[in-house]
Picture 1 (cartoon, helix red, strand yellow):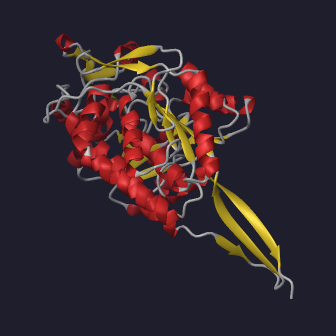
Picture 2 (spheres, rainbow, N blue to C red):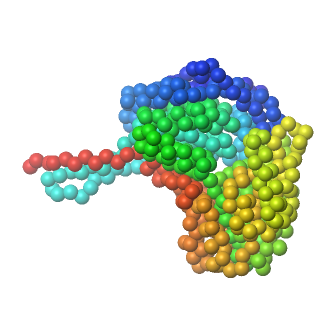
Picture 3 (cartoon, rainbow, N blue to C red):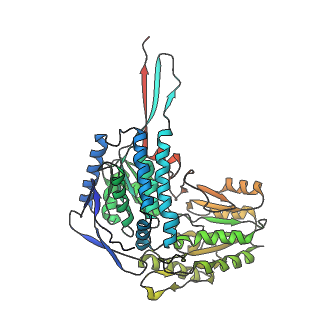
Length: 486
C-alpha cells in the first residue's frame, strides 16, 4: 500500500497549516525516509483549537446529545478505524518503528475496541439519587468537564490517543489532542475518521508540534478544563506545574515504570515464565512504560531461568518492521537509540554481566535498531535497575527470600506494574498485597484488557486510564437538591 501522509493539523473540522507556516520533518525510524512535513503548531494554533473546542462544547452539538446518540457516532468511529486497518497500521509502523504485525494485530484493533467499549458503556452508566427527607429530592449527576487537553507519547500513538478519546468523548467533552512530534500521523488520521463518523466539527482537534511549544501552550491554557498526559515523569512534573501556573486544571499523569517480574523458587514452569518476560520486555522494542524490565528471581533457580530467557532472544532479533515475520522493530529515533546505548554502557561500567546483546543492529538500514540485551548480577542501586530505559534491556536481580524480593520490587521511584510467579496462591496473594503498584499480574503478564484500570502510584502517576474508572477523569459531579412542597 502506498500512502502519502497529510501532516497538517485538524482544527474545527478542517485540515490546516500552522499559522506561522512552519513545519518539521517526520522521518521513519524504519529506514530514515521522509514521511511528511508536519505542521509545527505553537501557542497561536493551540488557541485556535481550544477556541473551536469551547465553541463546540458550549453549542451543545455534542455535549448535550443523548448518550445513545453519542454511542452511535462512536460505534461508527470504531467501525471506520477497523475498515481503515491496513492504512492505519502502516502509518503507525512507518511513524514509530514497531513491527507491522503488531500494528495490525494489537494497535489498530485495540484502539477500535477502546472507542467501541466506551460507546457501549456510556448509556449504561447511571446517575444517583441520594437518601433525603420526604420533602426533598437530591440528584447526583455526572457532567462533562468541558474542554479536555490530551498529550500522548510516541510509543503507542494510536492506542494512547484512544485511551484518552474514548472516555472523554463518550461523556460529552470536546478534545484538543497534541500527539508526540516523533509519531504524529495516526492521530490526525483518527480525527478525520471521527468526522466521517458524524462527530461535530470542533469536538476533536489535533495540533502537532513540539512539547515545549504546542504541549506547553495546551497545558498552560486558561480555557482547558482537564489535561490527560502520558509520558515521562520529568515532563509529568511540568504538567502539574503548568496547572498551578494557570487555571488549576485537573491533571492526570500516566508516567514511567520500572516493573518487577518476580519468580519464586516454587514456580515449576520456568520456560513459560521465560517466554512471558521476554515477550513483554522486548515487545514494542522495549518502548513500553509497563515493560517488566527488572527480572527478580530466586537465587536457586536464577541460572536456569536466565538461560531460558536468553534462549528466547532469538525470537526478537531486530528485523525490517514492514516484514510480517519481524517481532522486534526499530527504536523511534536517533536520540532514543543513543539513550538506550548509553544505558547499556552504564550497566557494563557499573559491573553488571551482559549475557547477550548490547550492540546496535542493522546499521546499513538507515534506521535505529538495538539487539535484545540481558544483564545478569544487577544490583538494584545500579542505573539500569532504577531508571526507565525505554529499550530492549532486561536487568536480572537475584534474591534470597520473599521479604527481600518484596523489598527490591518496592525499592523504586515508580509503581506502575509487577508480576508474581508462584505455584502457591497464598504466597502470590500475600506478595501482591505488599507491592506498591497499580497492577499486579500473577503467573502471567499483560493478559488484562479494557475492562480494568491502568495506572500507577508513586512517580508512575495518578488517575487511571481504561475501564469505567476513566470516566471519573473527564466528568464533574453536580448535586441538585430540590425542596418538594406538599
